Length: 153
Image 1 (cartoon, helix red, strand yellow):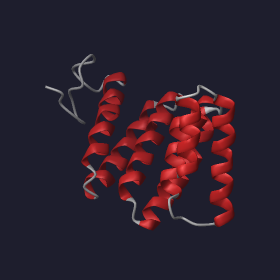
Image 2 (image 1 turned 90 degrees about the vertical axis):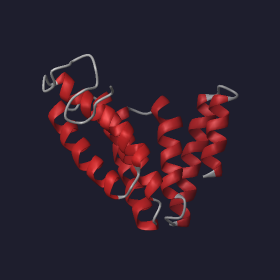
Image 3 (image 1 turned 120 degrees about the vertical axis):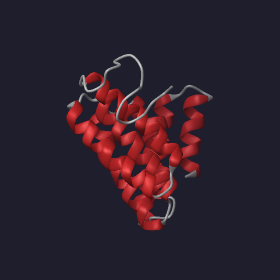
Image 4 (image 1 turned 30 degrees about the vertical axis):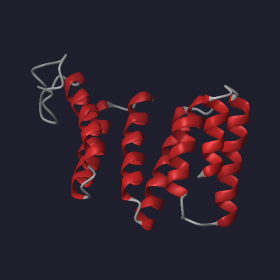
């Protein structure tokens, strides 16, 4: 995970996307070489959310985010796993998946987040979920996040 942090610093401090991308790829390679789930979920979260979305098609991130989710669940890192699920739903929205598909994902992910008592992630996800309802015309208010998933009042 420290290597992925170095990649983030290369991007955020020095503004060097090429170096950041190279370091991110090396971090993935090292994770693969050690064939360990230890820290894998956090590594995949940092690399995909902070680095790779600058240099890779967004469609390619979903597989890696879900891989990180699975790894985190295997190792008991439910906090990071739920953030990976949240960001995966965000990616689905950004790449233009049908709103009905996203709404179903939101429902399933929210259920899991609530069961695992990961309320920060569930709260963020409910905003996306209600946005889907609003955009699909399933809410009386299309400009406020008020409806089946949440009530911002």
